Length: 95
Image 1: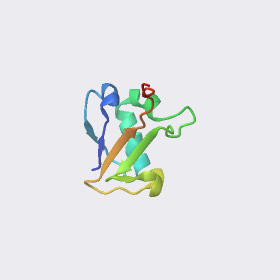
Image 2 (image 1 turned 30 degrees about the horizontal axis):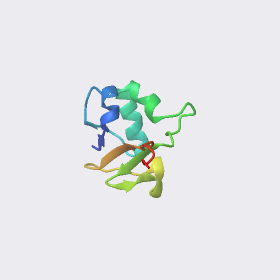
Image 3 (image 1 turned 90 degrees about the vertical axis):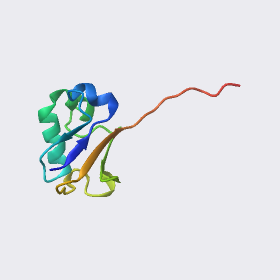
């Protein structure tokens, strides 16, 4: 069964779990299972049109799924899915 790593900022929506085992043959199925188990995650991962938000990066065993078969990427037992939200912002350098 694949394991999904939950980033710290989203753990409050997953019962404070750092990782979740979810059944699924593809990344899309696994993420759907994650959201089914933790409905509060949906608005943080998916836009209103049902697509993953642009700032949510998903890796399968350290490979960006965008360079694989995206949500159709096939999974096998022991695979690790990592959700990595993009981080933006910061401050301007001081003079």
